[in-house]
Image (cartoon, rainbow, N blue to C red):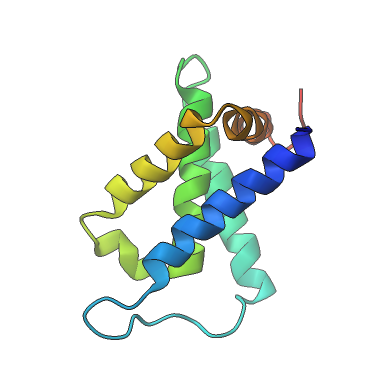
Length: 124
């Protein structure tokens, strides 16, 4: 498969994980019906960038942590910020990241993404 296929599989995995948690549990989860405003997207991107930049440059787990920050942000954007109060949110992020790492092609696409994240948006 090409790297495009791996990227598509990565996107599919993320969509699958997100949709699994979108099903209402004990009552309807509140979720914004409309897409976030452009300012909100810019704010989220800024928060992601700040969190990634705060990671120590010499941290051997820097790329993995940057990807985790991105995954957390994506899940919170899709499922709602109330998940921050959910004690199982960290476990969900762990499960998503472990599934990504378990598939060779998805792991390669995720590694490429994490490289872009730590380099400030430009692949090395």
